Amino acid sequence: MRKSNLEKRARLREAKNTLVGLSFVTPSAIVILMFLLIPAGMAIHYSFTDWNGISANYNFIGFDNFVRVINAPGFDRIVQNMIFLLLVYIPILNILAILLSVALFDIGKLAPVYKVLIYLPGLLSTVVVGLIWRTIYNPVIGPIARVIGAMGTEGTMPELLGQSSTVMYAMSITFIWFALGFYSLIYMGGLSNIPTDIYEAADIDGASSPKKLLYITLPLLMPSITINVVLSIIGILMEFQLPLVLTGGGPGYASQTPALRAFNYATREFRPGMSMALSVLLTAVAVGISVILTTVLRRREVEH
Image: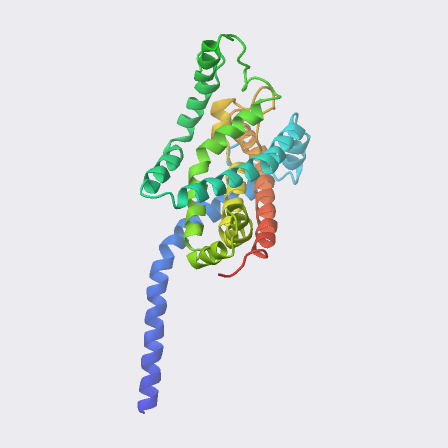
């Protein structure tokens, strides 16, 4: 009898704990369902239709939207821009963030001040950042043009955002300036988890600063590197506001990103089916690259 009462109390306690757990999980699950899973499912559904974005009537057209997206003018240049950002922007951003976090991590009493200063650009609106850098790059009234003019070489400032050969580099600088502080703080968090006695042992062995960075900091920082690489990939592939404000995707398709192209399909060309088809392709690419890199980078993580 006593045993059965104990079992009953254990079951009641387990049921109570389950209900408490569900009460915490349910609100988040509802938000994810309403604002992520259902919209994603609808986007996939409508990407296979000729829906015009307004009418309740539409027809299934299979993969026609995907074929139109791939065969659309400028698609090859958009893919080149995406590859450029993945191969140039992502490595440079993360390398600079690592170096900056190492330099500022143990700088003394002013470290909190420097951390706030480097994070400030990330607090600005994306539109504001775009307008600021459009002014900076302005070949007539921009500060760079004024400095060049003050040096007696007025009129030699190139139109960085107006030339297809320079626009992606100029736009990448803006991206890096905007995101650098955020990723640096994540790396600083990773650095705080590295035991100091490892560095002390390295100092006793006479290891130089570059060797400590290469053989201690980077291997033990791999969890943060994995997080930042994945976040920066997803962030840059889904970014459309900065290119929209800086260049509008021009000149031609020279600075148009896949996300901006999907935005234009939906808002300027009124082709929601093509917009969702491109969004589905872009999401698949982002998820695929993120999964591959996460798998590769996690194999290089070490315990400490």
